[in-house]
View 1 (cartoon, rainbow, N blue to C red):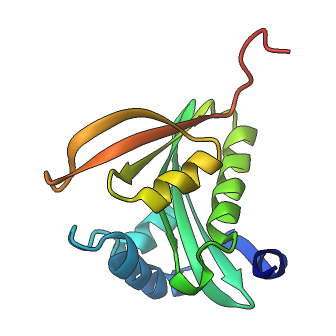
View 2 (tube, rainbow, N blue to C red; view 1 turned 45 degrees about the horizontal axis):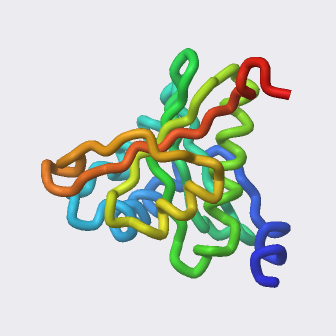
Length: 163
């Protein structure tokens, strides 16, 4: 179907300074609605250069289809932001972005990847559950003191003693 067609045309690569305007618009319009606009172009430009972060984009036939930001700590990583343009949703773009980042995290010796999701964002909650993330906790008022966040985590380590 469309998903397999798209996935073969999707390239995941590091974001470049010329991507920040399109990334910032996508975050403002699709992710940060009602929360104020944190991920502005100058902020994204700084994050691209940050040593403990990976900012990656998904390009479909050259067009920016989505992007993601991961912060790395010694044994854990946090998926700070995932944004996919509407025409590319449910077509594997978000899955490929997360899979790329999780693979890099596993190679870097990370044990767990965390992500925070608006409690009302049922689509995102299903998306992450399908990728092996489990609900850990709930933070009330996480988003501007108004909306709660669910904290999800994915373990990258096999359980000790597991077959």
